[in-house]
Amino acid sequence: MLKKIAIFVAALIILYSIYYDLTTGTLPVSMATAGIEEHKSKQDQPAIPYTTKKVKRGDTVLSIAENIHDGPLPVPIEQMVDDFRELNGQIEPNHIQINETYKFPVYK
Image (tube, rainbow, N blue to C red; front, side, top):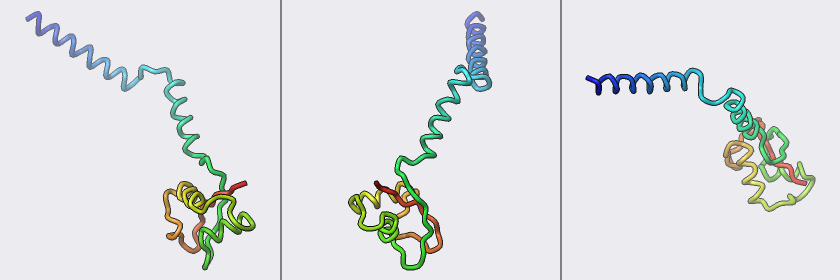
């Protein structure tokens, strides 16, 4: 009988702990939301400087990038292609669509 009461009390404590953790939480609100806000702001801002351009008939990623830089690219083409993919959600440069706007990396 004593064993059953001890198990019942332990189960109540565990259930109350779970309830408290889910409703109130064990971290202060400022600590819990600070990490989320920091994570969101880092995701929203790409590390690569870019400009947006609308694709016209006959444009390629390379031709648009060269127009942005007024001549040859100051970086290897492979790097520009990788940066283009990163800025545009892994869209392949040869799959761009006419009249769509894309982000193009800008180099100094």
